[in-house]
Length: 435
Image (cartoon, rainbow, N blue to C red):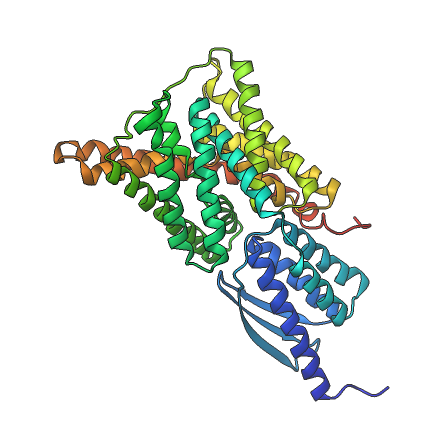
């Protein structure tokens, strides 16, 4: 049998490397955590009969492919494309890696399937706009906003999210988009202070821009750090913090321009803990569906998102407000995250979809947006108020900022513990027909 020439081997290595680079960069851009990108790409390289070395960064990746004898190699550096987070693509790309491994698909077939996945249409932007607005209104209710605040937040999100869609479509810089949308949404939220005086004015402005909080990058960043991909995790968290700073700048513009004093926070007490827990869970479920659809998950995952968010948020509320327990928010959020992760694994195996496609959106209603808002508010007051108040607001800023970080870290770690415990099952759920 004639052995392939060095030129043939080199050409095959080159073609395979270009495909794997396109595959891995697309999966990274779609919102997959780094470990999934690495495992899937290695699996596809093995299906081709090659060894692969990957160096993955947030914006670029370097891939080197070797033949079995390590006599030939090809290296390629690929820039990660700018595409919105897409959990459906995450699922289908993971399925493609298993199909390639089990069926030994030819390279041409893999290219065809990859292009088909990339070219799939997302959910209707009008449906996403409507559900995101409903979700943020429900988010307002989770923080005890009344019906007036919910209506104002719905309108603020509708306008702000529509503006975000249009500016993003036109290629405007993401930092500028977040700053402008936060300003517009909080200006509408501030109408409760100026005109309506509905009783929970602080919730109207405080939750009007929370639809912008980059929950998935924050969660992925923490997960990457825990999973020993520290550089990518820090990069994702840094990018998310830049977006949060832009949100803060937009909010600051509204507060300074309208001379609003958002320092008084509504305290609503609901004595019936069971009824309040059920209501909290139901509003969290509605919020999860709206926030999830922004990331374009498979439709069959939406109801699971709602169920997990209902359970998780209900558990957290009960643990924090039951007079016999009264856990702090960090501990309660960690336990609630663990409950979501524990339920996510069997559901992932049931519908053959990566657990994070519905576990992460289920966590979004628990993202400590109000603590982040309070920290930003305190930072604004440090600058605006006389020196006599500086020490007080510096202490408040570090208190609220620390709580934001601890709650985020606790709920994400709690969620991913079951995923790591059942690591083999979690990373093989998209492999159909085999264990």
